[in-house]
Image (cartoon, rainbow, N blue to C red):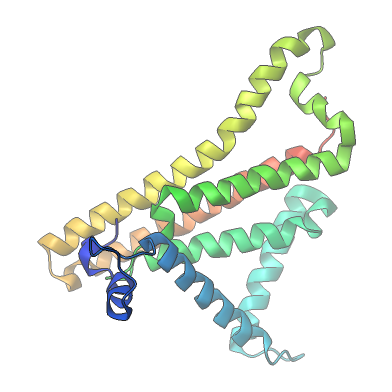
Amino acid sequence: MSAVAPHVLLLDKVTEVVGLVGEAGHSLIPSHVLYTWLVMLILIVLGWAGTRRLTLVPGKIQNVFELMVNGMEDFIVSNMGEHGRGVVFPFLLTLFIFILTCNFIGLIPGCMAPTANLNTNAAMALSVFIFYNIIGLKTHGSKYIKHFTGPVTLLAPIMLPIEILSHLARPLSLTVRLFGNIFGEELVLMLFFMLLPVLATFPIYFLYGLADTIQAFIFFMLSMIYLKMAYEEAH
């Protein structure tokens, strides 16, 4: 679903023009994949523009990037300690920027937010799940099992299935929470575009822009908490 009716999605029209359509007239590439590629292209271009001429006296683009990167690094390290500086910081920062850009793309008429699709969110949630478990195993080795068995050995047979279900619910929770909020937002925007002139919908863009930022931050925060817990010793 998009902020406008699905049949007028801009990139879907592009695939029709270049002939990437099936027998039923539908695009051979799913819309959420097309817009994910668009987000990736935008971020690559912005990254190139912000780093191609690095100087001691930063320009406007470099200054914005440095402010964001340094601010996020300080925030992660202050919450996780020095563990947050290694592979964790680039992973979490990339995740936040990617989700935020995906959310904002959905505010553009004729576009859809890739995060309004379960597949996109599930891929990110599974990446977080796999990443924090790898971190836990590398940090604690075989002792990582204690995160699942609890502090009392006698209760381990009871705690183990409960903890496993709890951990498996984490990617599901991350996926559904982000999907529900962004998909609902796109439905409301679609109704506004159908019932009101485009200019009349502009005031709500500020609220949805704020909501999109909050949803990206929630995904980022939960991911950081899971990673922090993976680094901690089991009690």
